[in-house]
Length: 339
Image 1 (cartoon, rainbow, N blue to C red):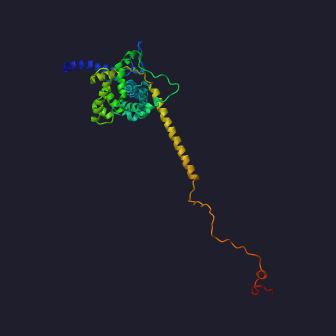
Image 2 (tube, rainbow, N blue to C red):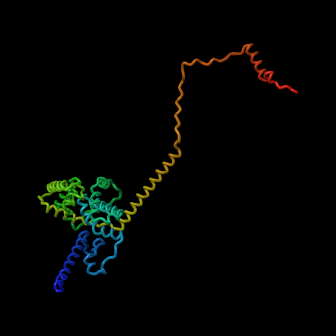
Image 3 (cartoon, rainbow, N blue to C red):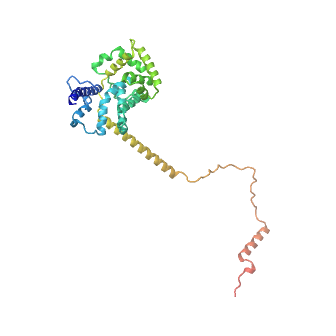
């Protein structure tokens, strides 16, 4: 049995090395190529693989903190997401902004994202929603003072960007409606299957298939030469590869997300304070009982004027004097007697 297991163990070594090489290669494709000096950017560092940790338990990394896990997800997925989002927007600035906003939302909701079966898919869905939203495009159309020129593709890929096929492909994508554009990018650009594309675009599978067929027909009609679905997939991959983004550092995104959350909290506290103050003042100054309004005065007509009495006669004067004397002295039967 030992001799039988020896070749198996020997074959496991190259297989593990091949898996590690594929994992490192996938991580390298997510970032930019190394420059001519041989320096590697922070987002090009290879990730530790499970094969290396299984070969030597001492190489197993310690449990990651939420910040470290977020940084690893961002470093691995951000460059590729910017390239995919560039196909949706046609603008590198809008693509970077959409991806950064998606990762900021992911950091604010990290307990939910950390336990998601596909964190990269969660961030991709949010980034695509943000990139295709009307307010996002409108916000970038507004003039911003002292804003720099929008960055374009890397100089090394200038020849590919100047290719008329690439320009026609990008123009054809922008002519599509957002649902059709998203379905085509997910299916032919990202490489998802039809059910996954339908689930991420929140549509049924038949509707997604119809969107993909229609988008292929429209985009292929814009190209200088006829293209098959395989050719379209290759062209989309090459067009996305022409974009060489330099992502923002993860700590900067986490800081921006925390600041945005604090601003919303402060705004909510201020709004609640103003609402409570207004309510208290209203309760203090408002009347606590119903006071009927006083009707406005109106002249009364048809009533005879009050008669004014004239001077008293001699008889009336005599009667008045008698009454006054009687009221002062009182009746005889009530007059007190001195004893």
